[in-house]
Length: 192
Image (cartoon, rainbow, N blue to C red; front, side):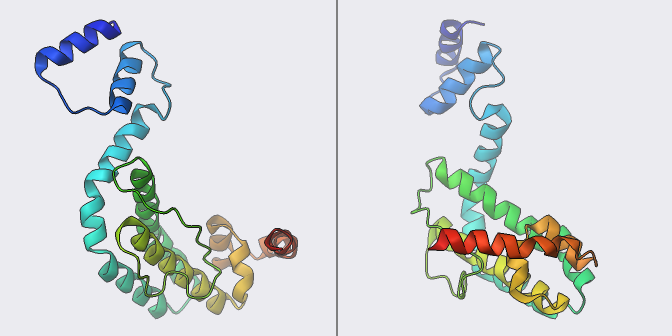
């Protein structure tokens, strides 16, 4: 199907209100170019997240408070690792999707840089909208890492581990901690 034919077909159906990005994607698909920027799957995923944004924002305070409470109640590193496989990891994955949806134009934000190691990150986030919710999600993220440090006995060193390596430490494999001094030095060198 040619681009002109596609335009004519959509016009005959009375389809209106598509963004230029949506038209571009449809034209790319009509050309057989499924490797279009962002791809069809990425575009559809972003649309799905955008539809869920209002509910996501409305339930943010309550949801984050519940997760911080769950994290605080955990008594063993293994239990904490399991939380990542369930509600905590799932929520943070959802929050990341919402940020992508907000950057897609419907919910603009100021795109602040957040660091989970910073004291107070995400605690009582005053912001509204997507970025306020992202700050609260970072608070959950920070609570998870802090609790992992308490339960494992490795404290702030765990902030230098990505989630996968943190899970290894929580399950008893501490070999990855050997990389922490080098990562800390690199981070402190960039912070100057």
